[in-house]
Amino acid sequence: EVQLVESGGGLVQPGGSLRLSCAASGFTFSRYWMHWVRQAPGKGLVWVSRIDSDGTSTTYTDSVKGRFTISRDNAKNTLYLQMNSLSAEDTAVYYCARLGANLEGATRKYYNCMDVWGEGTTVTVSS
Amino acid sequence: QTVVTQEPSFSVSPGGTVTLTCGLSSGSVSSSHYPSWYQQTPGQAPRTLIYTTNTRSSGVPGRFSGSILGNKAALTITGAQADDESDYYCVLYMGSGIYVFGTGTKVTVL
Image (cartoon, rainbow over all chains, first blue to last red; front, top):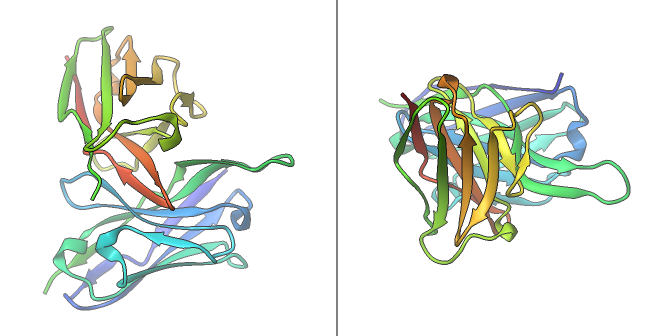
């Protein structure tokens, strides 16, 4: 079964740091690009960041640039999100998601979507 | 920054048809934006419904379909059921590794 399980959320003070993890199983993690998506309480979904399969290319939404770092350890089948200089506006449920793709055959096709989702981990920034 | 707009809410009768749209604050949506659609019920993780404009994700019922209508992406639910009552989000790929979620549409079935 293809599965993503987030962990590492919790309560952190403003200005603090937190590292989220996303453990992948049931698929060849090292071949897939991955996303982080967040959802503040009562609000909509917001794309946060994306990383390519070997971790050499990363992109971020403007509001987290310079504060958040996405990374991965393919040997551990784990995706990370290092979050620094946290503020109340970062309070949210954080989801990891797999970037949809067809990697079978000679031609790789990337669908630029999220095709598998974790259940999320909650981050609360408050004093 | 780019804003992706969706209708705030829609109401549909059981068995009825509803079309949700996903537009850009500036410009038209096309297949090059790889429109995708997600369903979310309160307290749950999103579920992928449609990707690359009109491809249904595995296990998604045929009553869900995607398209481009005019200058927007669209999600149509044909023959709505009670358990379709959810929030629906679109995502557009803006290029250069940047993705933007729509504002979301709350669908009520009654």
